[in-house]
Amino acid sequence: MRTPMVSFMTTVLLAMPLLSLRATGLPVAPDGGDHRALTIEECVEIGLTYSKSLYGSLMSVREADARVGEAAARRLPSLKLQASYTRLSSVPPYEIDVNFPPLPPMSFTIAPSIRNSTNLQLTLQQPLFTGFALESLSRAARFSARAALQAYHRDRNELVYGIQDAYWMLVRANELKKLLDENVAMIGAHHEDVRRLFEQGLAKNNDVLKVQVQLANSKVGQLEAANGVKLSMMALDSLLGLPLETEIEPVSHPEATPAAPDAAEAMVEQALRERPEMKAVADQIEAATAALRAARSGRFPQVFLIGNYYYSNPNERVMPIEARFNDTWDVSLALSFDLWNNRSTIFQTRQARARLEQVKAGQAQLHDGIVLEVRKSQYDLLQARQKIDLAEEAVRQAEENYRITHERFRAGLTTNSELLDAEVFLLQTKVGRTEALIECELARARLAKSLGAGKPEQPK
Image 1 (cartoon, rainbow, N blue to C red):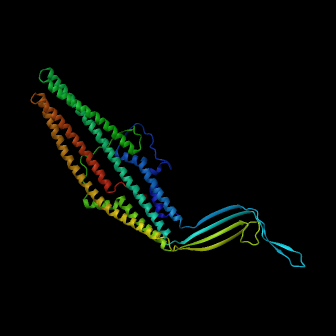
Image 2 (image 1 turned 135 degrees about the vertical axis):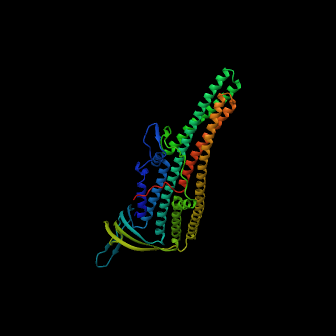
């Protein structure tokens, strides 16, 4: 028997994109070509649909759902069919000789020798009272299934954050490559200027060598940035369930002015209310409480109603015994009570109680961890927003410094080393601005994850 609660959970899961895949086997993403231009929302949708790790979590929910059905089935009547055929050795029949003179002697067969025996037995058993064991185990299975569903939501949130993290890391790698490409072009132009000045006798050979060294170092960084783009792209492909050779072009860009987070207390309350982990541990406590009650069931007797139907050849309950099929039946009320089981019930109860206390301790620890995570995520986001403003100001100053230094260098009013320093400083500030923008996006994603955002919507 399927309970309404479990059926509802199954309906929820069937409404998710992941379940639109094949009924069996791992989800496989369709071949979409070697190049894709994707927004971060599109990446999240693809990952939720074709993620192998999320598929495994979904199978855990289905397993827990099946356990609920199994526990409910134990409370219902069971019907068992047994059949046997036996070939017996030859034995003399049981006979009685009667001699009453003047009558002639007579012989009576009481139990004939029947060498072939065929038995069919149909048994119906209904548990009437099991010391609340079956009810408690069924309740424990239901709450364990709810906890498994919340674990699925948790894994889903983790996957969403992982995809967002990988996406912004790819954006970061692309931006760093662009900056290094620009830097290589800038130093290349600087090298041409210094080389012309050297040919005109207005610059030293050492100045040319300095620029060449700087250009070589920039090209090394350019090569490393290109490799970083490939690795970041492969990491994102893996999370999305796409072939690792798929080239993803990020379309979304980090926001320069992200919205400020809500008040700390409101966010903490939301996280404690919405986080799947908190809901899961509450269900685990209910399941452990039910398991404790089931462990105590050994203190009570167990009562069963049993009915048997026999169809046998020969049927020993039918006299006289003869080689033919006869049917009989019986109904029993059976009681079983453990008078002494070497304290097994006591030890099982202690185990269940310890498990319950363990889950309660985990709930308290999880509560503190969520509060810390939310507040840290809020502080990180506030700090990241401040870094963006400082980084933007640093880039403006570095661009102005480079413009002035470059004009002075062309006018012969400053040295080659000062221009190289201005170029390095400009690159560093632009990299810092990119890092600040990406860090802010990641901080927002971490805050959303810590609040329990991104949970699948329930069907109406």
